[in-house]
Length: 525
Image (cartoon, rainbow, N blue to C red; front, side):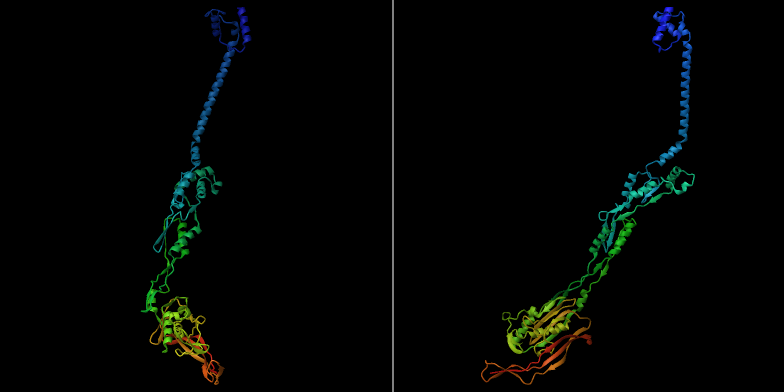
């Protein structure tokens, strides 16, 4: 026993960390190993019995107390946490509602309810709405013609994002009133979220468009409907029958482009993108109608002069009258006698006849055509044409009064006039039975209006009584001949007299004719 006891001490000294075991358990171990009393004998090792069991029991009780205390504390904490969780459940529900990343119920933008939507959903809903301009189909009607304005012609832009920022702030911010009250910003926001359900908030976007682009569209419409009035005109004139035909007049139209622009802009500003804008043009009446031409186009003036029995001269007069006949002088155009007849030549059928040259009478090809130009001068003046070029003869003619003749000579001396009227004139001229006649047809000068010509002699110059003698060696010796006749000189003023139903209303100076005095010239040898 003592030996074994020593061994035990040695083992305990070598493994001090070995856990203490109950005495009974130790006895069973000894018996099993054969180093102690037999199992069941009840012998106890003196070293274990001396004090090991009480220490182990105190140690076990301590840890049991610790474990119980921890468990109790955990239960108490769980109960406390559970109580807190139950107490703050309404707050958490409010926080979940306030913390939603969606728009408050009852918030509308352009009458589109976006409550419960995210920003992306709300933006898409607004873009597809009519207010976005995607539904732009504005009809414009002018005088029965129709145009439709779509986003392709007029793109619309809208401040959706800035309005959504404002809409998102609804229910997410307090107010000045909450600062002085006991209501916290959190409670205010929560209450306002429910307030918008019964008192909706409707916000509106601003739609913008290019005024310059809208003006371009209005100009397109204006160019389509605007049209100038078309005056009736003379279509044809039959010189043989003196009959006219006329074109049809057409009424014009003028659109008030500024008024149309304002009407379209007003509809767009009211967000009426599918409405109809109507407008009418102002009629523009033609200045000359077909009915007016039919009643007014007729003979304006006519003048006739008597010819002589000289066959060659009458031939030349007939050819010149035929060259002038059938001439139309349009508004603003100038008539030239030399241009109308051209050079009077033998190839054209003109013959030598008496003409004035160098103050004496000589035969030249085309002699006598001045009677046609003089007859035309009188007719043109009485038709109120503007006389541009006209010259009197060297001495007065016997077929017209002084101051009413118009001499011509190719190519430097011409008779011409301009048609300053709004309508064309037509010249009918002919020679027949020793008479030269010129008629001018066109628009009447006015109801009952006519023009006459009158002359006034203002000066007379008598030639000297004594002739001038000139030697001519080609004459027979001792013979004489008259080279120039003595002719009296005259100054004559010609006037146009305007009459209304035969009564003179005014007179207008037309021209001054200077016929120089010619002293008699006699040749001798």
